[in-house]
Amino acid sequence: MAFTEAIYEAAPRDILGEIRQVSADVRCLLVVGHNPGLETLARDLAGPGTDPAALERLKAKFPTAALARFEVVTGWPELCAGSARLSDFIRPRDLG
Image (cartoon, rainbow, N blue to C red; front, top):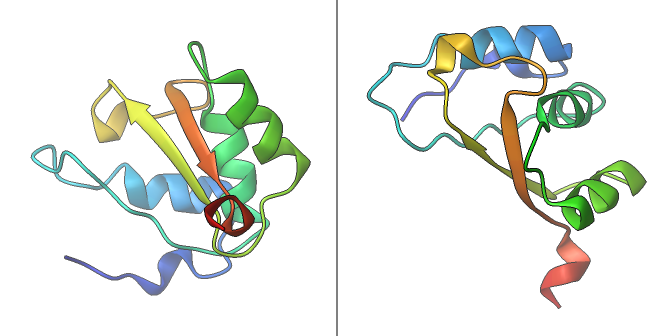
């Protein structure tokens, strides 16, 4: 487990830069950050095969404590706009 202050209130490109440095042996990654950078990056990453309903919810509002779940088939260094599949978007109100 690693924590970095570099993504706190960071721009999308800076968050992506941190993700691209993740070791190839890491299969599951949780990125916790702040908007607007995290929301913008999530929108940018959503590519082919994205769940349309999840993308619609994400675009409507990315509230505090929401979770955007992506499936990534590239290596972390190759991650770029449109290269991941948004498989779910869960808002706190969806849990109740």
